[in-house]
Length: 207
Image (cartoon, rainbow, N blue to C red; front, side, top):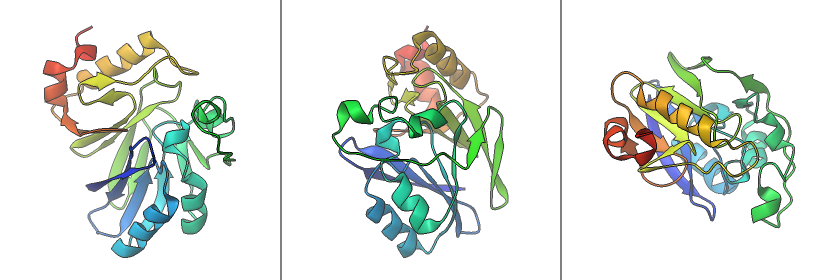
């Protein structure tokens, strides 16, 4: 499986394209903004997008959701605990940080910890990692890990928004830390890293 990163929106959210080994079957992770830009890249690469994955339901990861969902006619997957954020601008922090009005529809598929999602002949494994939100998830894709706003390069996500919980966040980071082997980490914002680097240097992994 291959991954490509696109920075979108004023908060520079990392939107990811996952592409199966067949070179065509794809998934979009966190279409945070700039729907036209995302759709154009899909067309340029001649991808067959199968679904949209959301690491969590905050507005800066979902602003382009409806535009992309409608243009590509694909289902949206989110953890069952974060579906409510799609339907409530206050809970998604949209009403706090933006004056835009965005109405989302519910996700077509609600995820749970341990789910495996097929993309081509490969599998994406769901890790429920609450703390930033109740339904925050990481996605294991071969030898890389998409961490959303749970874990960043040298840092961790905020826990002072709706559904945030510091203790839960630390438990989630410990779960990531204790995964076997090494992974390249792709967070919701900022630079990529490696799990081995975070184990040594990230203060949130030292609790």
